[in-house]
Each structure stands twice: as C-alpha cells, then as structure tokens.
Amino acid sequence: MLNWLEGFETYGSGNISSPLLKRWIGDSVISGLDTSTGRSVGSSLRLDPGSSTGYITSWTFPNVATGYIGFGYKVGTLDDGKIISFNDDLDEQFSLYCNTDGTLSILKGISVVGTTIGNIVANTWSYIEVGFQLVCDCGNNNVIVRLDGETDLVLENVNIQTTENSWINNITLHTLGSQYTYFDDIYCCDDTGERNNSFLGDSKIVGIAPNAIGNCNNWTPVGETDNWECTDETDPDNTTTYVYSNNVGDKDTYNFTNPTIPSLTTIKGIEIRYYARDLVSPHLLTPIVRTGGIDYNGTKFTVTEDDWHYYHNISEENPLTLDDWTSSELNSAEFGMKY
Ligand SMILES: [Ca+2]
Ligand SMILES: [Ca+2]
Ligand SMILES: [Ca+2]
Ligand SMILES: [Ca+2]
Image (cartoon, rainbow, N blue to C red; front, side):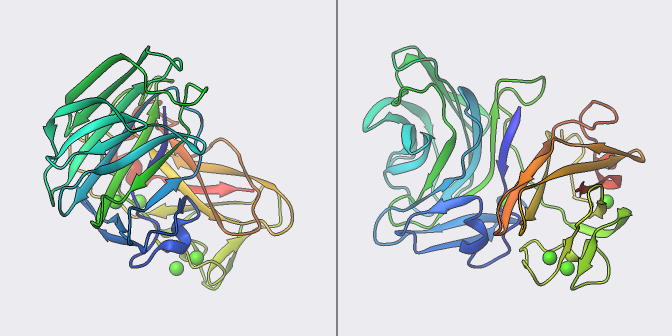
C-alpha cells in the first residue's frame, strides 16, 4: 500500500520553512529550506547546509515492518555522510550512507552492513530505492538497495534493527557534508494490499491544483468569488483565501488542472492533500473523489489542530473501475471534501 509520498509541490518557492514544517521537522543546523527545480517537473527540496550536517525528519506515518522507500537524490560534490535515516520514532533503526566514491552503504549505527557495487554521480539526479524487512532485533532482517531501477545490493539475514520494535515510522533526510542537498519524488509503501506492495521503480510526483468550479459548492468562500479560487495556491495563503463550513454534510468538489503524463505511464496513486484547521473542536472531514459523475467517499480524517496543518488521503485506484487511474479519468475527475 502506498501510504506516504512527498514531491515538494505544495510549499511554494523560495524559503519554505514555515509550511514545510507542517509535514517535516528540521534541526537548527539547517540554514535554509528552499525549493529548487524539480527532478523532472515542478519543485524539489534543497537542504542548505549550515556549519555542520543538518537534517529534516518527516512526520510520523503508520508503522512499516516490510517497506519500500524511493527518492530522487542529487548533491553537487560527493562526500561521505548519511543520506537518509530510517527511524522508529526518535531512534534510528538503520541508515543509507554515501561514500566519497559514490557507492552507498547500509549502516546500523556506525557499522557498515553492506555496500553497493554501483555508485551515484555528483551533480546528477539518482533514483534510490531501499526495501527492508524487519522481523527482530537479531540477524534475520533483509534489505535491498536499488539504483535507478536496478537491484544493486541484497543483504539477507542481517541485523539492521536497533530498537525493540520491528518497524520504522519516519525518515530523516540529511545534508551531505557542506553540500546543498536535493531530494524529490519520495514514496513509501508497505507490503500490504493488492497495489503498491513492492518497489515502485523510478517514480515521479506531479502536483495539480484546482482550476474550475466543480459539481458541489456548499462551503463558503472567503477572499475570492469562487470556492476553487480560494484553494488553488500551491503555497497555501492561510487566512487570506479559504473556504469554511459550519454545516455537517456540506460538500465541495473542484476540477483540477490536467497534468502532463507520458503515455504508457502507470498512475500508482493520487494523494489529495488538504491544508486545514479547526478553531472550535475536532471535526471529521470526508475526502471526496468524483469520477464518472459519482461522488466516492474516502476515509474520514479528524481535523484536530487549531493551527494550519496538512492532511492527506491516498486513492490508489479509481473507485469506479477498481483499476488503475487512467490519464483521461484523472483529467475529468473532481476532488474535494465533505464536512
Ligand atoms: Ca517534485
Ligand atoms: Ca487563489
Ligand atoms: Ca487559499
Ligand atoms: Ca481536470
């Protein structure tokens, strides 16, 4: 199941520390969080190094015992240092480490568990995937590293579990030494469900935004005439333009821009991302996907925060066809929410 993804497409441009912190937490060493040109389209994350190595850590996602994480990675000059840590809450289980020759090592603590044959290249985007199976704090865990779609390192029956729990539930992205360090197109799957239960291969994340009125417009717009215009910023503008509702059952759906998707591309899933707050008390929001003229309810989520916060819902298949989303189905779909 595809349970987490990040393309850095909803944080605007330039310095993005404020909205980024709604899904990521940085350390004080990072001198800047910026978006830069994306790996293929849109934006990527640029971690600006401070006086020493810095990092940002994702918000917690569901515990993953057997998982697959892929990401685009680029750094100006190769150096030795951590690229990404795989964590159980605040504790690192294991990490992926860059060596000065561009080979990658799996580390438990500071011990090298294994090293790739292939290598990444300076100033060039690589797509790195790490698959792991944590079963115990013992020597029975497995890990695979893939580089640009090819399996490069297979480690069986190794110990990569540091805590007493056989799972990870967040990741940390590191600056490599004193280099500007770029990340993009991050996915995280587990081995459950019928879809997205293994490596996805080189994957791209494209952002689309509301661009036209949809079938339902029950919510009240503030700051713009049409509801969709209040929600189309790729860098959310908080209280400047927004929609609100006080009535259970109110529904809004919007049309979205049509992404450019090459033919023969499989759409692995669609994340609907919400930026919301609740000033009174926790309320439930139901994600809505409208396809084929029918509204489908996603899994409800609770808006708990009185400050702006990101929430998301992932649709791995078209609820009408129960098959992969096609490009034309996505183009004509509407997305929104019901109070
Ligand atoms: Ca991106
Ligand atoms: Ca707008
Ligand atoms: Ca807005
Ligand atoms: Ca559309």
